[in-house]
Amino acid sequence: MNYYSENIAPDSFTGAIFALEGISDACVVLNGPTGCKFYHSAISDSQFLRTASYNPLEFIEGFYFGQPRVPSTYLDGNDYVFGGGEKIANILRTVVKKGYALIAVINSPGAALIGDDLSRFLEEEVKDIPCFSMENTGFSGSFGLGYQNAIIGAMKAIGLRSTGLTSEGEAKKKTVNLLGLCIYQKYYDQNYLTLKNLLGLCDIEVIAAPGAGDDTAALRRMAEAALNVIVYPEYGRMIAEFLHKEYGMPCLCPEEGPPMGFDAASSFVRQVCEALGADPGKALELIDRARARAYLYLSRFSSLLGLPKGTLFSLKAEASTAYALTKWLCGYLGMIPAAISVLPESDTEFTEKLRIFLTGIHYQETLQKSIIETTTHILLGDGNTVAELKLYGQRFCGIEIMLPVLGYLDITEKTIFGGQGALFLLEQILNGLRFVIP
Image 1: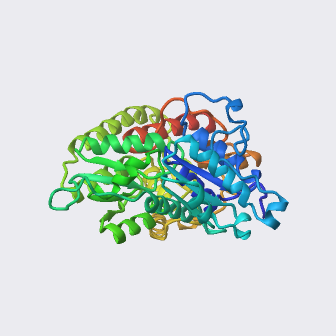
Image 2: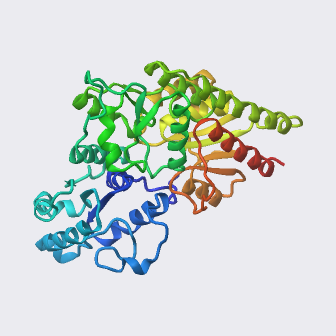
Image 3: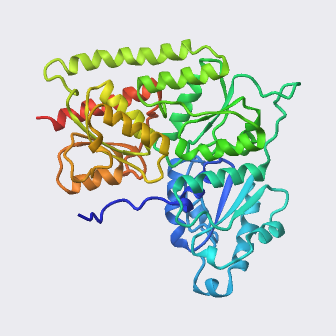
């Protein structure tokens, strides 16, 4: 059966925009019609606040259309015939006055067919500011492809320096970069802070996480790090390969995936510490304290009915996320997978790990099973999928772990990483089951 309410998956164009909007002092200039601008500008501003207040009347100048982010050349029919060179030059003259440290011009898929020489306009209009253009972002390529190509383009444009290296030319010991974090991820900022805090307890410094709110100054220091840690392989492997090729930097992709759940979080810390010769003791103690707190509430919640053991869950996410969460939900909480849908661009290594795990517990048929056609008690995924399942009359609890969301304003700081992230997810699961299970 065809379900016409399913998500339209974000592609490489969207990935490139959000990658660069995740650099705090960078500006994305969109060469395209206004219809390509509004969603990207709205999500960038809601996910990553750059200003303390917002007044649409402050952005009534040309190219902004009442939004503070992603100014657009608003191409029309004539521009597609005769070219949009004049608009590109004018928008660049406007943007250079705003004090950005990096400017990137990105063609919309349609604008890429016009053939305007973006590099020439940048050379003529942008002086003494790092800049680059993306003539096309991969057209129908994946979000991860566009995201990583844009981050690599930004690193090339600003130039990575190595002034932090030791006198022997070696990288600073116990320093890392975190690869694969993005402002288009749910709770990305607190996830980043959680990793900083956990690694800080191990005396490990995080130099930068490109695309997750750091500025160009932080990105320039990335070559100083002793290790690149791939948090999400779907959005970090290409970047790690680039840094290894250009700067000889080693990388680590933790075996258990992103640090979601107590075991994956502990494994993440142990592997990074082992690679850098650091002591994981304090960070592991913090995770264990969260695990002990979880036990107190789980033991009381499950005392009568044994829940959440035996309840059904469905999951939609990248393979790395799906693997980490599935192992935690099945192994720690004793829940049963009903349907697990991995995104098309998922990492092949973690897709295979997930398949092997599900086969080992005799639930291999749940992989890529239709979430909409499968009964469940708990659904972890994006807001649109939660709404879609509600539309078809299912009784369940939906937990948003990725974008797009239903619009709930997250004012209190939240994370799904580390011990606190496991407690947050556990809180939502247990409270959800109270209203789902009669």
